[in-house]
Length: 167
Image (cartoon, rainbow, N blue to C red; front, side, top):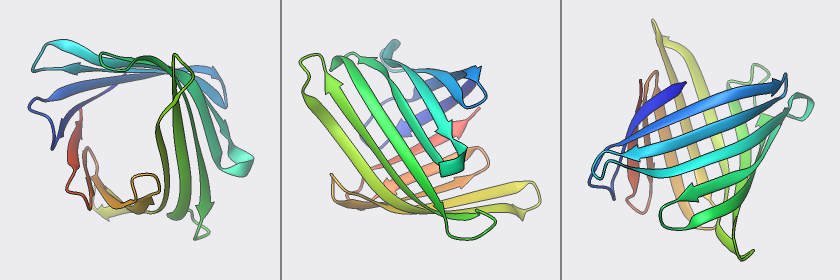
């Protein structure tokens, strides 16, 4: 199980996130993940999703159900397509999108982004770094991510940020 501690710019408490991937076959897995708000002691959300990877097309697709305390139950669909910029795939151009559909079949929170990702293996001894720079189409905002081994910092040009530490 993958666990992490997360803190965002618009939160007053730390969140504990857990994710488990259960293999279905070599290209498909069931992904279960949820979050516990340490301020309230209650779960923030729970999600179950079937994810399939198409390696010949460097594409992933996921469909699932998401439950949270505010928006209740909803269905979600997400996809990502990766285009290698270099032959070694350390620099890629990615297109990704997500659509949530509520119980009344209304679309909620559409997301779509285009980004460049640069993976630097052994930046220093035992230190891997990933840098992402992208643009979120629906919010119309540039964003960036810096990941160093267990630490991840995400930020956008509207001043929102979050920090994650993988346990």
